[in-house]
Structure formats: structure tokens, C-alpha cells
Length: 176
Figure (tube, rainbow, N blue to C red):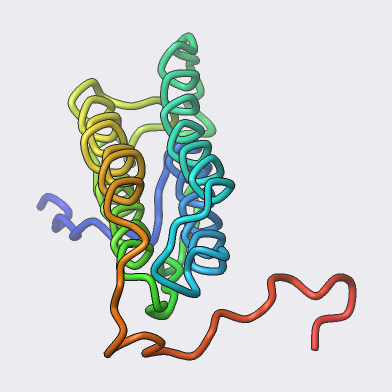
């Protein structure tokens, strides 16, 4: 009798490149939510540069991984499973456009974790690769370059500030 098929678990992957990009998504979501632009309804130029670099970093990694030669790794593929855990969640911040941007990185991460390529050892199937690049090119980058740059700062005198301020970043060697 054939083994019963088990549903895919998006908290695990066999693909080294999925694991690498997933870790970066977690970091980028935290960095974005702790940015200076998160504290008010404005968009700082240095945050724009940083956020664009995060998006381009994902695309560059995808391209780099895709260009690599296929490697025959029969022992590695069958035995290796990476635990991704749950995706990092960050609380909502004052700047609604920042909340949207974090969600868009989450869309990338969700598609990444659930793609068919997650069962491969490395690289991406062409439809998965194209989908992930499209999320960056058609969702993340336009939100930063077009929407946020055009519509921020917003004048919201009746509802701002509506949330507590974002705290400091890492506290050095001894966190409080």
C-alpha cells in the first residue's frame, strides 16, 4: 500500500535558497518596522534607499541562485530539512504605508515558503522564480518608489499619533 501523502508544511523546507531568503525576509520586516519612517506619516529618504536595497537584495539573490549550475546531491537532498519556524510578525506602526510594506514582504515570504521549489535542494522552478521576481518588481518596489514617495507625508491631524512610538533598535551587547 502506498504511503499516505502528507500536506506540505511551510515551516520547513528542503531548499537551501528558500531558507536563505526566508531568513532575510524576517530580518527585513523587523528592520522596516523599526525604521524612523515607521514613527510618523512621513517617508525619510534614507529609509527609502534602505528599503529599495532590501527589495533589490531579494531579486539579486534570486538571480544569483538561479544562475548556479545544478549539483547532484543525492545524499544531501534526501536527508536535509531546514526548520523555518513561523514567519516573524511585527506589530502595527503609526505609518500605514510601512505596515503595507511589511505585509508585501510577507506576501513574498508566503509565496517563497509555499512554492514547489521548496521541495528541491536548491534553485527555483521557473514559475516560482518568475512569481517571486514579479512580487518584488510589481508590488514591493512600486509601493516604495511610487506610492510612498508620492503620498507621504500624510496630514492626519485627528488620528496621529495613534500608536506608541517605535523604540530604539538593538541595544548593543547588553539588551535591556
